[in-house]
Image 1 (spheres, rainbow, N blue to C red):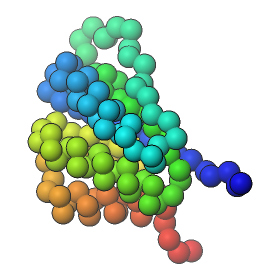
Image 2 (image 1 turned 45 degrees about the horizontal axis):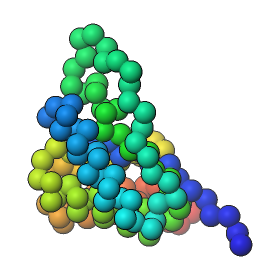
Image 3 (image 1 turned 30 degrees about the vertical axis):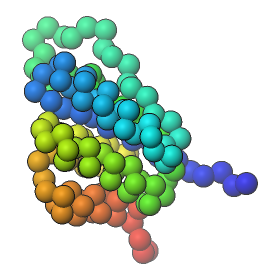
Length: 130
């Protein structure tokens, strides 16, 4: 059996406060664990202390999930579909997905906008052609 290359992804949930961010990340974690497309999924370690004077945008680690998945466009698309559906149902906050140097931000976009953003994101990660 041949080895399948994998990619690492950061899924960062952002909400209006620390507690909401942590709760949102936990709900997303539960939904993603139902997917067969992930080789691994875990919460990023929480920071031991919040720096004095930190702004809410600096607390992103509280909602960060680390995933490993097969480096195949259809696998990445499947995981992103779960994330986008979860975000639409949630109706608030946002999710940032980072794979390598590429970033996708899903917030209050429509389903069609999210689909187009996701397709463009996948095309950047897995360019076709020479």
